[in-house]
Length: 299
Image (cartoon, rainbow, N blue to C red; front, side, top):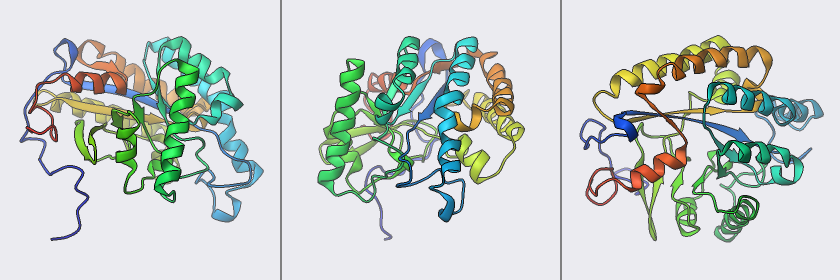
């Protein structure tokens, strides 16, 4: 037998109980933005340049565009189309760009834990260091927002062998770091369970536009094709379509114009879908009968 992670068991998507999202819908769509802060001249860069250039002022400022301009353009678009959102937030943003969480707060959007800065990763931390990181970020969000976040996404999706254990023990109810399914599934931890929220690797502007070098039109076409196909598939089973955005990329004028086209297509079907936030999906799953969702002890 080859090595396995022991977090969840295999169960194919056609061999599961069927359930519905609110209002009798079967396709949940959520949009999440990555609101990130980077150290100047230290740590991981933007992953858009050769390693010897990753810490240059030009690459740093390329990312900084997202907080100065791109985020605000995205929020205007979300307001225009009445799109709720979740936001993975580096807590350094509270000190560097306090008007950003204020805008998020004014919309009633969700804030998720996302580490201190995306210049750092979790995978190299000791258990004590990782526990401190999670607890300090959680405490800062609680201090600023009046409540602790229920969801977490690690910077760069970086995990240690105990990340899920530490998150569950810190009170987190779901995590976006595992990308193996189109439905939420429960993962085992050493002290209970945590929900694995579907998160996109390809319906993700950073992967698509930077790594795969798709054009803005191709990225929007991909979102539309994914939506149309999943809406058809959801006649058979409940599904989640996540969309991940980085303001420094899709917040640029020529890209946001194409993104608007994709979102206009999605919201035109608002009466057939649940356009929501990841935390709301988690709360809905938590209320389903035992045996409904894989990993809950009966499924």
